[in-house]
Length: 128
Length: 128
Length: 128
Image 1 (spheres, rainbow over the protein chains, first blue to last red):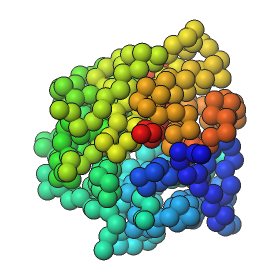
Image 2 (spheres, rainbow over the protein chains, first blue to last red; image 1 turned 90 degrees about the vertical axis):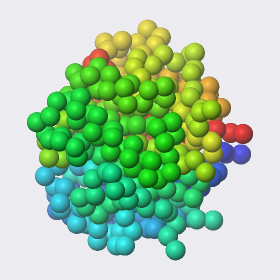
Image 3 (cartoon, each protein chain N blue to C red; image 1 turned 180 degrees about the vertical axis):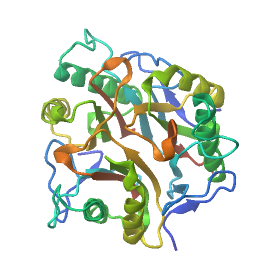
């Protein structure tokens, strides 16, 4: 029997490689894999807000499939290739999370897979 | 009622955007947002040790407001723009944490908001 | 008495600086420090697969010393200096983890200490 619960959300992209979309520990912590803005009509040519919205939508689909919700998101890491997009990304973040304000880090990485402008991962809590 | 406890520490900088300084899950895990060296007299022109000290002071103020302490810091991520500062940053880290040795990652990012040289976030535990 | 359990695994490299290889919170979350591919015969001149294998071996040695196992790894962050190594790194990851698929992020950093090509850290769960 597995120690951890591995999450497979139909509404989010299937893993490209050897990982789960998320795992859940016995205490209820949800560890979400980094999500690129894959899905919908979003491509590397889409605007940064559209990419941000899609990456976060993927993260939230996975958290919901794991038994969490928008309000149970503990921390989000946003990986951007251009820090000057901070304000733009913050606006989308605000729009997506509404009244809930998770902890957050916005980190400028040296590059993202496939040339996307943003990726996101998260830690969350599964309500029981 | 909110699932998570959102932390607001008066001794640390108010969030610039849509996030909380930290969130606490029901089991007692504290997820701290990335902290820039904002506060005191520190600016982007301050020395790297001064920036490191202020970023860590902000992280610890938040952890204390969340019910944790220096000894309950589980892991710190240090985001630096220049890896050659490793030794300098390690010395400040040692001075700040004293006998406690948290887990740690020192990561060289492609840039930090406002041109700072270092930022820090953390996972910690709330004593009950 | 310390709040957290600090881990010291003989099979993994001793910390270079002021940190523990990992800490364990009272609920059983294992926070593992970033591990460079130090150990065995691996150097900065070793192939990327050899570096990836050694970095992950260090992470797993620490998790086992902390009371976890391959199957209890919740999330792994892989820090690479060249994202074009994604496929290569994914293959090693698959080989190391076998049937278990943890959550994962592959992040391109601006540089790693000592000029290595990859580092890894992780969150895991201690079986009780």
